[in-house]
Length: 147
Image 1: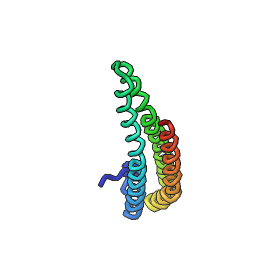
Image 2 (image 1 turned 135 degrees about the horizontal axis):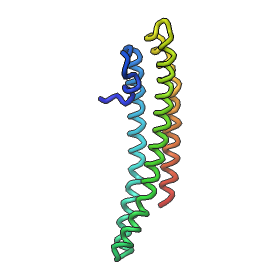
Image 3 (image 1 turned 135 degrees about the vertical axis):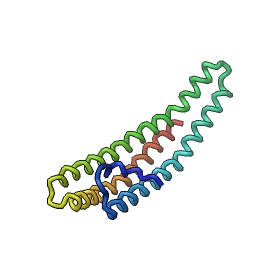
Image 4 (image 1 turned 90 degrees about the vertical axis):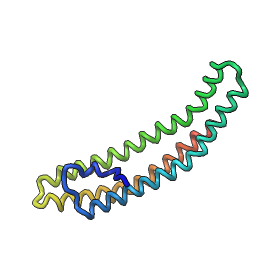
């Protein structure tokens, strides 16, 4: 299994407890992404159904293409917004880990300081996953309303 957050601790040895916390957080992220993707299947279906109707409504290729393009817009918009939300969460967590690395550099026990601070980052950012999922569901509802 790939660890999506392993890059955070790159460059320094990661204590086992922190590795476990990162893997647990990554697993929660992956589970959330699966739930969102499963929910988005309805949106994708609506888009495909809309596109198929374009062939019934239009006979000119240009009209069919324009119609089909409009059918894709809600899906593309949803995906773009979701990607932006995900980057915000990832950037926030990465920034927290970078701050930890800076703090740990001057500490008497840098590894312990990094582990303690890093564990706090993960603990602080875990609630963001639920907020992210709620925003994703709201974006999905908004996109569905466009059909």
